[in-house]
Amino acid sequence: MQRQQSGNNQMELQDPDVEADISSIILDYLEILAKHWKKIAACTVSATLITAVCTMFMPNVYIAKTMVIPGEDDKGGIGTLMAQLGGLANVAGGAVSTKATGELYITMLKSETIKDRIIDRFNLLAFYKANENNTW
Image (tube, rainbow, N blue to C red; front, side, top):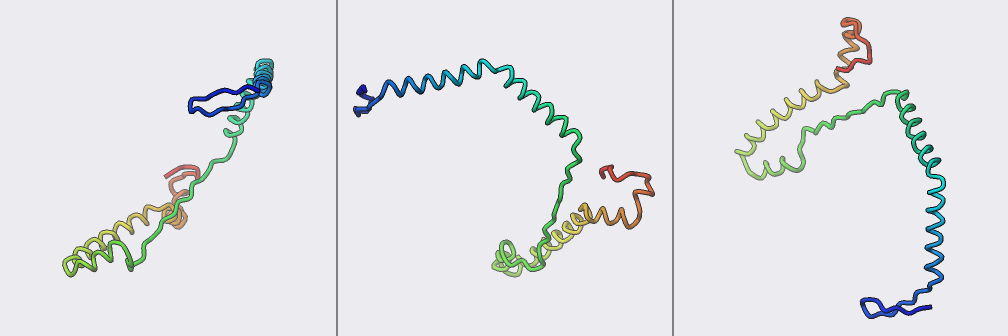
Protein backbone atom coordinates (compact mmCIF):
# COMPACT_ATOMS: atom_id res chain seq x y z
CA MET A 1 0.00 0.00 0.00
CA GLN A 2 1.15 3.47 -0.75
CA ARG A 3 0.40 6.64 1.12
CA GLN A 4 -0.32 9.71 -0.93
CA GLN A 5 -0.88 13.18 0.33
CA SER A 6 -3.83 15.01 -1.20
CA GLY A 7 -4.37 18.75 -1.55
CA ASN A 8 -6.06 19.13 1.84
CA ASN A 9 -3.13 17.54 3.71
CA GLN A 10 -4.96 14.31 4.52
CA MET A 11 -3.24 11.01 4.01
CA GLU A 12 -5.06 8.60 1.69
CA LEU A 13 -4.34 4.94 1.34
CA GLN A 14 -4.36 3.62 -2.20
CA ASP A 15 -3.84 0.03 -3.18
CA PRO A 16 -2.15 -0.36 -6.58
CA ASP A 17 -3.67 -3.84 -6.97
CA VAL A 18 -7.22 -2.44 -6.70
CA GLU A 19 -6.45 0.23 -9.29
CA ALA A 20 -4.98 -2.39 -11.63
CA ASP A 21 -8.07 -4.60 -11.19
CA ILE A 22 -10.43 -1.74 -11.98
CA SER A 23 -8.50 -0.70 -15.05
CA SER A 24 -8.32 -4.31 -16.30
CA ILE A 25 -12.08 -4.69 -15.84
CA ILE A 26 -12.73 -1.49 -17.82
CA LEU A 27 -10.37 -2.66 -20.54
CA ASP A 28 -12.18 -6.01 -20.67
CA TYR A 29 -15.49 -4.23 -21.24
CA LEU A 30 -14.01 -2.00 -23.90
CA GLU A 31 -12.53 -5.02 -25.62
CA ILE A 32 -15.91 -6.75 -25.69
CA LEU A 33 -17.56 -3.61 -27.10
CA ALA A 34 -14.87 -3.25 -29.77
CA LYS A 35 -15.14 -6.91 -30.73
CA HIS A 36 -18.95 -6.94 -31.05
CA TRP A 37 -19.70 -3.37 -32.17
CA LYS A 38 -21.28 -4.52 -35.45
CA LYS A 39 -23.72 -6.80 -33.64
CA ILE A 40 -24.60 -4.06 -31.15
CA ALA A 41 -25.18 -1.53 -33.95
CA ALA A 42 -27.23 -4.04 -35.98
CA CYS A 43 -29.46 -4.84 -32.98
CA THR A 44 -29.98 -1.15 -32.24
CA VAL A 45 -30.87 -0.29 -35.85
CA SER A 46 -33.15 -3.31 -36.27
CA ALA A 47 -34.99 -2.58 -33.01
CA THR A 48 -35.48 1.03 -34.14
CA LEU A 49 -36.84 -0.05 -37.53
CA ILE A 50 -39.16 -2.67 -36.04
CA THR A 51 -40.50 -0.10 -33.58
CA ALA A 52 -41.06 2.42 -36.38
CA VAL A 53 -42.95 -0.11 -38.51
CA CYS A 54 -45.08 -1.26 -35.56
CA THR A 55 -46.09 2.30 -34.72
CA MET A 56 -47.23 2.85 -38.29
CA PHE A 57 -49.80 0.06 -37.92
CA MET A 58 -51.03 1.04 -34.46
CA PRO A 59 -54.50 2.55 -34.18
CA ASN A 60 -54.95 6.25 -33.60
CA VAL A 61 -54.62 7.56 -30.08
CA TYR A 62 -57.54 9.65 -28.95
CA ILE A 63 -57.36 12.58 -26.59
CA ALA A 64 -59.91 13.12 -23.86
CA LYS A 65 -60.75 16.69 -22.95
CA THR A 66 -62.61 17.86 -19.91
CA MET A 67 -64.16 21.12 -18.87
CA VAL A 68 -64.47 22.30 -15.30
CA ILE A 69 -67.48 24.55 -14.81
CA PRO A 70 -67.25 26.88 -11.83
CA GLY A 71 -70.18 27.00 -9.49
CA GLU A 72 -72.53 29.96 -9.16
CA ASP A 73 -71.22 30.81 -5.70
CA ASP A 74 -67.68 32.06 -5.69
CA LYS A 75 -66.61 31.30 -2.13
CA GLY A 76 -63.01 32.42 -2.47
CA GLY A 77 -60.64 34.44 -4.54
CA ILE A 78 -62.12 37.31 -6.52
CA GLY A 79 -65.59 37.00 -4.96
CA THR A 80 -64.21 37.59 -1.47
CA LEU A 81 -62.14 40.51 -2.66
CA MET A 82 -65.14 42.10 -4.43
CA ALA A 83 -67.31 41.67 -1.34
CA GLN A 84 -64.77 43.54 0.77
CA LEU A 85 -64.62 46.49 -1.63
CA GLY A 86 -68.26 47.47 -1.24
CA GLY A 87 -71.16 48.52 -3.51
CA LEU A 88 -69.14 49.75 -6.48
CA ALA A 89 -67.28 46.47 -6.60
CA ASN A 90 -70.59 44.58 -6.62
CA VAL A 91 -71.72 46.49 -9.72
CA ALA A 92 -68.42 45.71 -11.45
CA GLY A 93 -68.63 42.15 -10.21
CA GLY A 94 -72.06 41.71 -11.79
CA ALA A 95 -70.72 42.84 -15.15
CA VAL A 96 -67.73 40.54 -14.87
CA SER A 97 -69.96 37.67 -13.82
CA THR A 98 -72.28 38.13 -16.81
CA LYS A 99 -69.37 38.24 -19.20
CA ALA A 100 -67.85 35.14 -17.63
CA THR A 101 -71.21 33.32 -17.89
CA GLY A 102 -71.51 34.22 -21.58
CA GLU A 103 -67.98 33.03 -22.25
CA LEU A 104 -68.77 29.86 -20.34
CA TYR A 105 -71.75 29.09 -22.61
CA ILE A 106 -69.67 29.77 -25.74
CA THR A 107 -66.96 27.46 -24.46
CA MET A 108 -69.55 24.79 -23.71
CA LEU A 109 -70.99 25.06 -27.23
CA LYS A 110 -67.52 24.60 -28.71
CA SER A 111 -66.84 21.48 -26.63
CA GLU A 112 -66.46 18.09 -28.31
CA THR A 113 -69.29 16.57 -26.28
CA ILE A 114 -71.83 19.13 -27.50
CA LYS A 115 -70.53 18.90 -31.08
CA ASP A 116 -70.86 15.12 -31.05
CA ARG A 117 -74.42 15.26 -29.69
CA ILE A 118 -75.48 17.80 -32.33
CA ILE A 119 -73.90 15.70 -35.10
CA ASP A 120 -75.69 12.57 -33.86
CA ARG A 121 -79.03 14.31 -33.25
CA PHE A 122 -79.28 15.88 -36.68
CA ASN A 123 -77.50 13.02 -38.50
CA LEU A 124 -75.02 15.46 -40.01
CA LEU A 125 -72.52 12.79 -41.08
CA ALA A 126 -75.03 11.29 -43.50
CA PHE A 127 -76.26 14.72 -44.61
CA TYR A 128 -72.78 15.90 -45.57
CA LYS A 129 -71.72 12.41 -46.73
CA ALA A 130 -68.74 12.40 -44.42
CA ASN A 131 -67.15 9.55 -42.53
CA GLU A 132 -66.32 9.47 -38.84
CA ASN A 133 -62.57 9.76 -39.44
CA ASN A 134 -62.87 13.38 -40.55
CA THR A 135 -61.84 15.95 -38.01
CA TRP A 136 -63.97 19.00 -37.41
